[in-house]
Structure formats: C-alpha cells, structure tokens
Image (cartoon, rainbow, N blue to C red; front, side, top):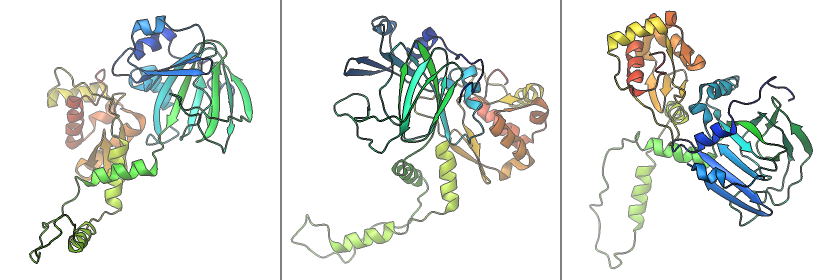
Length: 353
C-alpha cells in the first residue's frame, strides 16, 4: 500500500529506540549478521552494547512500544477497525544498511509500516517452511520470494500468516509492525485448563473400602483407574464458562506489564468530582474488553448486571479508550465506584484522574 500514511516518517529516532531497549520493563532484541553467521541477544542492553556494533547488518527490535509512548499507542489505535482482542502490539525495528532478521515467516497477520529510510521486502506464499539448523534465529532454509518491493516512508505491506518474507534495510530505517494475536490451539487449551482450576468444585474424596491385600504393591490397580476416570468425567463446562475464560484471558496483561497505583489516590468523593469535570481515559497498558454478560479489565471479569444503566457508557469507554466529562459525570454510583477502584489500581490515565 503506497502512501498508506502520507507524510509518516516514524515516531522514534534511533537514539530513542536504543534508550527504550535499555529499560528492564521493555522487551527488546538485537540481531547481528556477519556473513553467514548470525548472533541474537535479548535486552535490556547497555549503551556500550550499541557503541560496539558494526556499521552494517544489524537490527534492533523493540516490542510493545505502544505501552510506553502515547503517539505509538495512538498509531496502534488507528487499526481499531480490527477487534482489540486480535490486535497484539506495536513493535519497532531499527536497522542499519544491510540489516534484517533473515527470511522467515510468522504465524499471524502483520502490517509493516515504513518509518524513515527505505527497506527492501521480498515476500510471497511458500509451502516449504523448513528452517536452517543450528542458528539462533529462525531462518528459512530455501527462500523463494514471489514479490520484490522497496518501501519508503508511509508505505505499508500486509502479510498473511505463514507468508515468507525478508526485509533488508537499504539505508538506516525504521519499520513499525502491527501484529495480531493468534494463539495456537494447544496454547488456548492449556490456558483454558488453567482457568478451570479455579472453577472446579467437585465434592467427594477418593476411597476404596473394598481394597484387598496385594502381592504387587507397586501396581496401580484397574479399580483405581476406573474410579479416577469416573470422577474426572464429572468435569463439565458450558458456553458461559468459555466466554468468561476468553474475556479474562484476552485481557490479561503480558508478564512484562506492571501498573503503578497513584502515590496518593483520590478519595471516592473527590474522584467523582474529578470524573465529572475531566472525564476519564484508560491507561495505555489497560486492556478493556466486553461481551454480552461481562466487562473484562486486565484479566478480571465484571458482570454487567450490577452496573445498571451505566453499561452503554462503559462499553463506549472500552471502544474509544476514553469517556468525555458529560458522559462520565452521568454514570451511576456503581460505575463510579468501579472506576474509582481502577483509579486506585493504576488502570486509568493519571492525567485525567
């Protein structure tokens, strides 16, 4: 997509990205190529790590920049024609001439928006996804691109899942990657089983009053296996359980995300007055989703029913990430109390509350 964002030249300088990569609350990676050899390192980095790099063929990747920058968050929200439950984060890569991470494929959709500089992209569908062995990065063994394009500032490339691609910096450049969430079925199942651990409430206890003496004490008997199988077969879940799991899981913050409660939280009455004067905005790190029965905030489900007629305004807050003063001031007491709790937990933008 040529000139997808006319006039866009990026949001960060190389120095600003390096400063982010030196923080311990930011995920970052460094990929360096030396001929046929590749090296890979994870941050946080030191300033000396960047001073020792060669003039060519390296790339710095900084994950989740939308969590640390208001303009980056605003750029990610420009893709809100897609559900927030499917949008992952905004990653920025900075590459010097010749820099790249090698021909590879991703298991999810991605938009690649060019910042300053130019990057050459070779890409296309590919059935052979075998990787080169023994490398610290995942590089395709036999890369056969179908397309070859050079992207300049504001140009954008969309790649479906498992589309092979290789981006090489023509000159020093940045690329902004808008990635999608696409969990494997195995990952989804494991997360659901973990969720069920807190939902299970089966009565009874294992017992075998008819147990007979044995000459094979190490054997697990057939009667024990049958009884345990019967008890485990009592596990049940329904669509409502799956829906509650899904909202909680999709809104759960990543392990690297932490919230900072205000040093002096407002008292409930003062918070309500501030809400009516200034409205409310979600913190960049907060994920707020909803379905027909629940509101999900950062991994916690809140039922709609106790929130009464304030539900439409809270759905608007989830969709727009903010709520104007007139709408916030008209919220019922139960909704104001909920927002005050979020204020105390650091889930709201402190500049508005």
